[in-house]
Length: 124
Image (cartoon, rainbow, N blue to C red; front, side, top):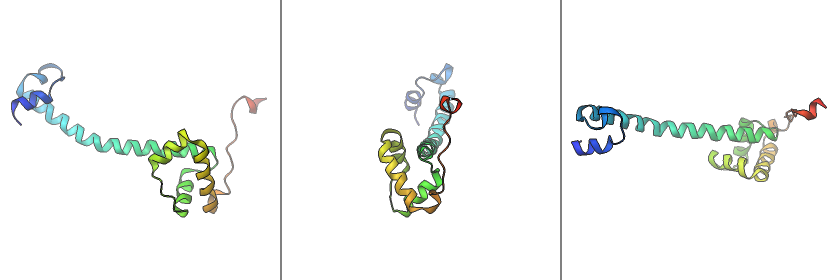
């Protein structure tokens, strides 16, 4: 890369990394390595976040994540984890319908017991 492109990419760096070509080149190369790596890490992090949200939503209805996903696959419902996560957060009634469908499709879902409620109602 030529000097102008290096300095353009190094804009906003601290110290001599923004105006000394040798240091700027090293810092820009490292920054590009980090950005390449973290684009892949971001996809992993988002998928795990979606799985956590789906798990939390399905456990409210007494089904864990694995059984919920297995029941959806048995019923051939092909919604990805991003959509399921959005449904669990913003459309609870639609998500409950999916949980019920999953529960009926997979016999392992029927034996689950709803978790006990915590809070003041238990104490009183």
